[in-house]
Length: 474
Image (cartoon, rainbow, N blue to C red; front, side, top):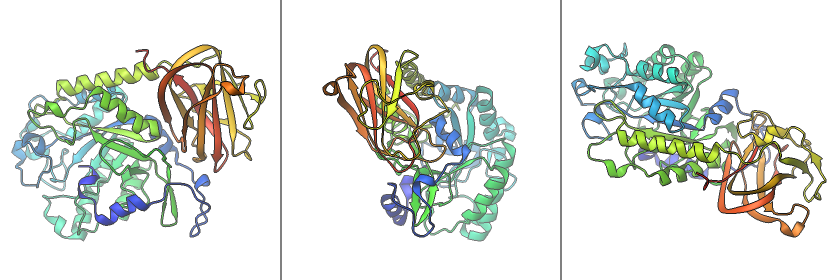
């Protein structure tokens, strides 16, 4: 179960108080927000944008969200389990990676662990010879999704949990199994639920992960693991803050830790429950969630729950397909193309002035990995896009090139029917951070030019995305 339900009060305080806005060099370390760079695997992970988190286990067969570790392994017996069907449903919904809950808080392992009998090897499923983590991993590889795992630190079944040191041995051994049996992992989830009164040797777990999966991104709550790679957004409702900095300050220690926003496809339910169709989120709710996560520079992770057959419910699979089609219809049709002229320069440069941007595809291609970099000394900048013909659009997409760090701190977007007339410009959006992606939606307009005004940056301005779309065209 993701973190919110059992956060310690101290961690709630950390989440509220951790400063995400940039400041000058941190006194304790001499670090600077603008100079704190991501690792290549963090950038690659951010470009995935959408993932899914699979909850499936004894709870599925007992109509429960929270297992207490007493369920007999015999209850786990899905008759039609098809991990490939899960992966195809996730992919249809736009997901590019899948995180499998290998062990939830009840302690039941979905792989045949050598360190406990409380696992699939003691169940009737596949005659006790199955390995669900392997089946999910192979299905992901087959269909082009990255694969990750979730291993709950909290374990309500394992007797060793009562002894911190013994449980550290147990947990680290299981982490080693998962890190060595299932190929390259894109993410490893360390949940904070149920951690009250227990001390974990997270340094040890992290060493194991770094040893066997050096390119995996470690997920954890901001106050839970300071040397993690990805941080929890702080809610399970599927939204990130409007101002969203990838760099956080942990008491003078700066880390590049982008946000992951997790939310279940069914309202407040991570596991499947019978007679629960009303909880399925609508297409409109999912579209709004996308705007408040991916559209604010955060990762969207949808919680999916196979049913007691071992299949993704037909209604869930259909909703994911609808969601993926909506994203493709809206964002698969960029309106600015080869006939768009891009110019950049100091704020307020006149029509026809500034510098002509010769390689405009580095900015207009929303999937570009290249960048447009302003002169290193400039902290403000205008970029004007002149269209070849009037365009109707209701949203603008911005991207910052983050390879050297996140810097943009304030911007606005204007549109005009006549770029040469100062009075023709009209502000249509404004914000603080851009980060990996920023999407603004507004009442549809027709215009012949767009102006992005970078008003403040804490370092050199680097862009990799400027595009407009018409969400009403589908």
